[in-house]
Image: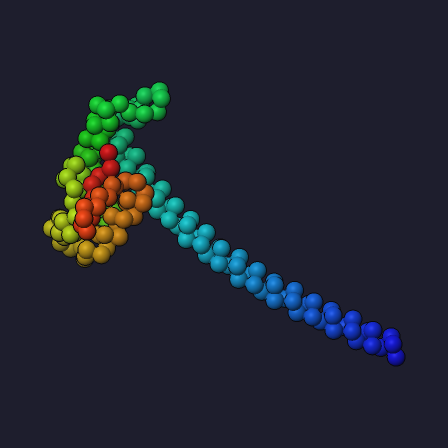
Amino acid sequence: MSDTNDNRTLQAHYATQVTSDLDRNVKEQEDVESQLSILESKLDQLKQDQKLLIIVRNAVSAANGSMDLQKDSGELDGNANRTAFSKKRETIVSNNSPQTLPQLVLHQLARRSADLVSAADVTQAVQESNPQRSTNVVLVRNALEALVARGTVARTKRQRYVYYSLRT
């Protein structure tokens, strides 16, 4: 009878251990699925960033003829920096067919040169230049903030107002 009690105790122990392992496995699967979702989202964002960077690189290259503005140290001097900014702005302004909202926003900021511009002003300019496109201040502000996060646009806060400009 002692063997029967030992077998039951052992079976109960195994059942408890298997249940615990199964619960841990399910939780780990949920964690991995969550991480996978986050990584897929990050990959999509990186692909969008790559497309925008390729567009900007091509615009700078087209305006510049080449990418030889950098010195050996990798930094630009004051005149070259202004020249690069000016050529970048001219290229963005001369681009006749921007497709995405961030491209339209960049186009409008480049047309205004170094001026500080509010999201409402950019929205109005985008609506005037593209009346067929449905835009609002929230969409433009989100596009501006995405460009700020990418380092393409600079944000300036004055009191409770926020202004944007093309980063030099």
